[in-house]
Image (cartoon, rainbow, N blue to C red; front, side):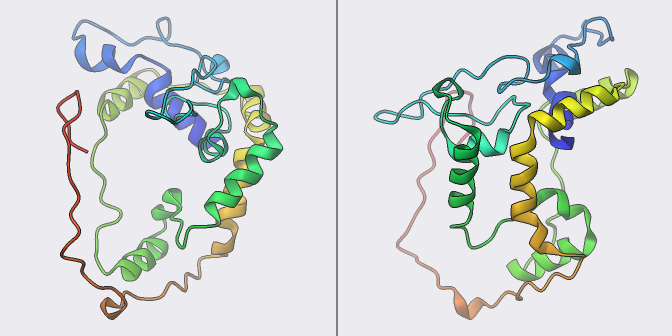
Amino acid sequence: VARSISAFRYEGRWDCKQLTMNSSFVPTEENAKKLETWNQTAGHNPMKCKNKGKGNPPGFVLGSCAVNCYTQWFDGSCPHLEVPLGKQYETAVSKLSRYNLILVIEQLSDPEYASAVESFFGFKGVRNKSGAWCEAESHEANKKVPLVIMNNTINTLTRLNKADIKLFHKMSDCLGGGEYSFPSFDKSRFFTNTSFQIQRKPISDGRWH
């Protein structure tokens, strides 16, 4: 629920293009979208799945989303296919369980957890943040026009996100009460493959991937 509300503040309350590109735009309560309508698979609206490449069927894309975002993302199916939520949850758990390491981003606010992660990877700075597009502008807008959250809205988002809440606890409750027994980085367990190179390609907006 906290993730859903945070996403609403960042990109669901006002259009980020207006906040970042329109110098005459002034965010107000009157021109803001409402948290009460932030209750669909794509935020304020149902998700329209995007094609994931030639030969691959359209799938769920994690972008503007308010309802069970991670469960649907890891399941990968389009909402219009109406795959039962329980089945989506089982698929998400199955996929996540194949990973050797899952980092809980929210937990990085705990210095002990951050230190354990840094020790595991052998470098410092995992808590250093770089600003995302529209982050400063949306933060300033929300500061000027504070969001009022009603209890019934919290209750609705809690009910709608029951699968994500269950998935989060399934994957993070093993952290316990702050005792993080991650092994320390050992370079002897890794080797450098000098013959393998990652080819970076430009994409349409000038960035590289």
